[in-house]
Image (tube, rainbow, N blue to C red; front, side, top):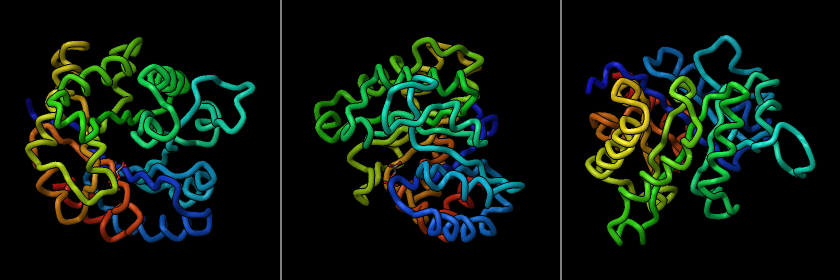
Length: 255
Ligand code: PGA
């Protein structure tokens, strides 16, 4: 498999951080540091920050995403945001199925699938998150679990639509904990995901498919993780809130 064929994508996940004024400051800090990036750069931000960040990134190489979306286009779903609402603003990406949504907000593989299909229908690029808990890793079921999460999430997604998707492998035990998967662990599971894609859509689709690692990726460990044959990028939480660190990761992906 030729890694060079694939697009490297570094995406920030700001989670529930930054008011609009703070978001403006952060994105202005990031912009000049990543302007020569030789990879795709995306920031996924809270809904209330989207306007400000979209405005600030106009004409730059930074794509903008949301952190979730609902599966219906509109209706009685108090507190939710739909995919067409996002595209109407100019949003290009959305994260679906982040483990924090699965753990704290009752997201299931089935609702993840519904949200992905709605997002793709609206024309969004999707960053799907999959990953195991520490308990599941210790039980030795990581590969099976991640394969199952991937298969259910992709139900009804066509080969053409798959081109608008990225999968982020994010071991739950590595998120926000400072514990990173070893480069080998990250690569192993990313390779499992790629083989699932190959089974479902063929080798050509799998070879071209971007798979990220996420979970305490930072300026220090990014280069080693990104050098793995099946790791094509990163989904970055904590370090994406620090312009210099985020830029360092973008640089590591640009090599
Ligand atoms: P982290 O978060 O980089 O802070 O571990 C990654 C994520 O949750 O996407």
